Image (cartoon, rainbow, N blue to C red):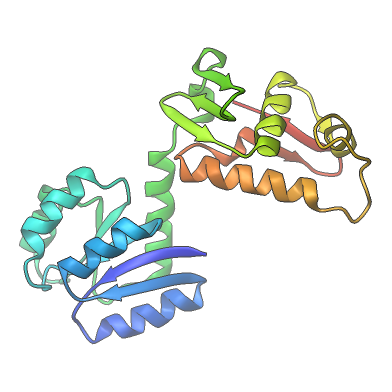
Length: 219
């Protein structure tokens, strides 16, 4: 579930709340900076949407925008050019005019997400190292902490980069059991590893699914 923080006082925010929820987002709506900060510290957010009409927001967002890795999008008055410029000067990543078009919002989020992720070809072998005792993979400037099984799967695929590794081989060499037709255990571990890659601002495509064959490691 993708979490979005919505900070807004307008009645139109209720419609946006329901539109985003219908698209599969879990929306956390607040109307003040204090509650917003609590949500930011306790949730992994896909994006933060906010309106300058919320009291005490300007100075608060100046601080947040400079420190938060989460994309920040201002919901601006369609006729207020000064407000939009102010938002970008404070450090917002983007802005949308009211009323918000949810499809446009999704496209802008996708663009911001792509910009924040390093290109797959930018990750070189020398930038990847393994710590067997802590099940940690160091990629570029990120330390990816995995479970023992996730770590062994990732390392095995890395050591066989450029090859397609079948599910049966991974089951036998890493999970140490035969691959059953309806066994989804391997897929679950791969899915969890990809989720951690994305959470660490790394491309999930480092582990590719080769349809009908297995998986491959790519960078």
